Length: 102
Ligand SMILES: CC(C)(COP(=O)(O)OP(=O)(O)OC[C@H]1O[C@@H](n2cnc3c(N)ncnc32)[C@H](O)[C@@H]1OP(=O)(O)O)[C@@H](O)C(=O)NCCC(=O)NCCS
Image (cartoon, rainbow, N blue to C red):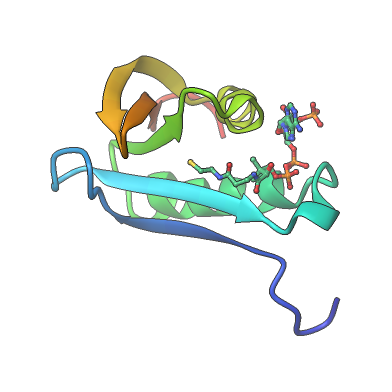
């Protein structure tokens, strides 16, 4: 796998939530799913955002039909705080507050 891109995780000003909020998102190459790659990557991003940058929270929008990502978000300590329309469907709004253990 040396040098190959296997997925991505981002941290950026929210696009579909109020712009002062910081959102994350994730994606891993399908042939490498269920090996812990997304967990490792997004835990590192959360640590950077919440511990190093001292942000109060990180937000994420996940398509309401996307069961793997919803389960993934819960597993990383994101709380589901509502739903909103997104791209013709519905997205769950998640927040990961700084005051819960990483
Ligand atoms: C969500 C995604 C990033 C998970 O990547 P991954 O590297 O396979 O994740 P991990 O191996 O770290 O898995 C962590 C947890 O995610 C959840 N999960 C991952 N794949 C799942 C699946 N197919 N079904 C149910 N839960 C799943 C589980 O809770 C899993 O923990 P477990 O294996 O102990 O049950 C990957 O499925 C993906 O890229 N999906 C498509 C892109 C996407 O949906 N992006 C989000 C847009 S908002």
